[in-house]
Length: 245
Image (spheres, rainbow, N blue to C red):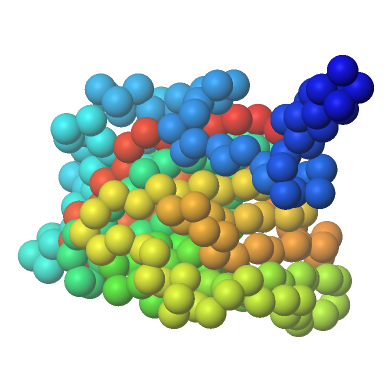
C-alpha cells in the first residue's frame, strides 16, 4: 500500500511540474489571430476612421490598398487612422507588398507635419516599422522626417540617449537569416509593441528590431498611426488590431 501511495504522489508531482523539465514549463505561445482584449481599427468593409488620398488609397477585397504607378506615382503618401493617438499599445496587422520598386511601413506615435500637403495627403514625422519589397529594410525601425533616419537595423537592439549617437546594445540574430522568414508578394504578420520608451518590431513571429529611446529631446510618447506607400507597386493591409497597454 505504501508503494502504491508513493507511486501516486510521484505521478502527481510529474503532472504538476512537467516530466523532465526540472519543475519548469515552456511559456504558452500566443496565436497571432488571438484578439481577446484587442480592438479592431479596420472594419474590413470600408475606410471608416481612415483618411488618405482617394487617388492612392481604397478599400479592396477586405483590405486597405494603396497603389502607385510609374505613370501616376504617389510619392511618399499615408492613410491615417483617425481613431486616436495611442501611447502604450500593441498593434497587429497583415501586410503584403507587390512591386519590386515598392517601399512601405507602419507609422506610429507620429505627428502630422505643419504645412503638410492638402487634406488627404498629409506628411508624417515619427517612428516607422519599415517594410520594403526587396527586404533590405524590412523589420528595422526608421524615423521618418528626422535626422536620425534608420536607428535600429534588422537584427539589432539599439539605445538612444541625450547627447549621444544611438548605440548598439546587442544583436537579435543575423539580418539575412531574419530576412528569410519574410514573405515576398504574400501576406506577412506584423506585430508592433510600444511600451514606454521600448519599441519592438516582430514579423511572422520573429523579433526583427528593438529600440530603446531614452533621448527625451527626440522620444515620442504618443501619436497617430499611418500606413505608408512609397515608390511604385501595390501595398495591402488587413486585420488591423490594437490593444492599449
